Figure (cartoon, rainbow, N blue to C red):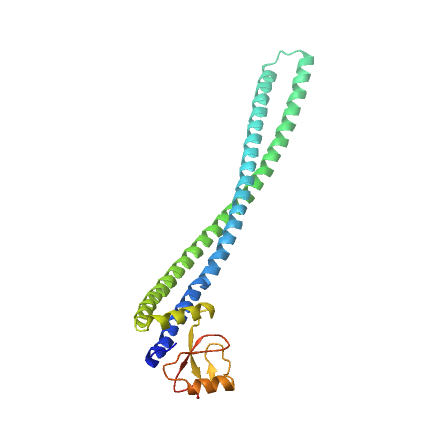
Length: 246
């Protein structure tokens, strides 16, 4: 293929635009905020499970406390009725003895229940503190995520603006290149990992950095200025410049 040397030189500008666009895309995909946000998301999921577990245990303890307190009230009410009967007097000796025995049992039972209530209240206090601590951590994590998202969005906006400008620049350069040469460049870029053209500098391909062999150099020296050269190694377009060393 032949192409005006000036058009071939413009391939280097096109390649520079494509390289920068690829760098911008890579930068967008690898922003440190993205990894940090992913980490916070994992932490948030783990913390959510911890909060749910702690709240469930707290709910169980609260229910147990309420059950015990109801039972204490039931025992106290029965104690009060028995006390009234005892104070009223006139009970047969056997019934009086049974009533006194029942009162003693009720007092013991109430004492045991009240001790259990105190133990459950202590557990509830500990769980209240644990839940409050976990919720505080969750709030701190949400604050961190919001800050990271703000940083990410600002970086996205900056990168996207730069990318949009570079795409406009690229379109302007591509419009100056003959269609057949542009098609060859796109094909070479597709197979070259994003590099379709590079400068031949000091007898080396700028893409794969391999020095041209003796026969390749001879062919390049004798090629017409309009001839489009290709690297035998990477098959990219070689653009001759004053630094080619031919």
